[in-house]
Image (tube, rainbow, N blue to C red):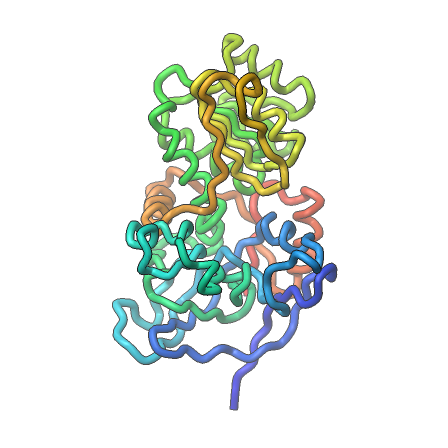
Length: 348
């Protein structure tokens, strides 16, 4: 007789997520069943649930949650290095494991994931907002060790994604440089800490919320600026009229990408980390000379290992509010309204 569990599912396009009863999955060959310890709530989920039916890419119903940490509960047939009882973080952007990108640990940029229908947990495949979740390959698990699972769960995306962006720009984050972080909520407040841990750059935090700016200052931002039409001028004042060497837009809507572009200087990096639907025009005369603009997707498996090591060393800590599984639909509404300053985490 099959066991059942609670799960948070997006069931119909346009509806709110629901807490439902579903069967506990059984692990097949090479698969690992995790008892979920914590699952992060992300703005990406809200973006997905706002897509119209005609362009919705996933099958429904879909169990949400692409930031997951859990304890190994059962192992399918096969040979494993992990054991029942081990606590693991889930690497979300899973690929084929065989292509050129995957061979470098960059499964986030797998050449064949779309072609093969490989989807990340919570973004097409059943996710972590449930009492149990199935992981298809052991390589998609990273040992958590003694890290607090509630604080660690958001690191698998809200930590990994800005870490990937910052690591790419480290050659420009030298003594005397400036880095601007636009949006200091879930992603941005982690980005501030990572910049302080990894570079000597002066960090300027930008947000519409005084509460979030206060958090950014408390965790290491040197300067804070209210995000409005005057923000680029204020940032130029703080950078001797030049602009910043690195700009991270952790919101990514049309308003923030406009601000971000106006904060750059010649040869700077502008990374649109958030997925708010905005874009940055690139061409002669639109930005300072040789500004590099990129929009990353998650990070590599090795980078997740590095992020967890930074957390273990105390260099980064996610500001979290935890909630029960039954509270999740309300939490999404509060998260969407900006009422949660850091990261919301669901604890089944």
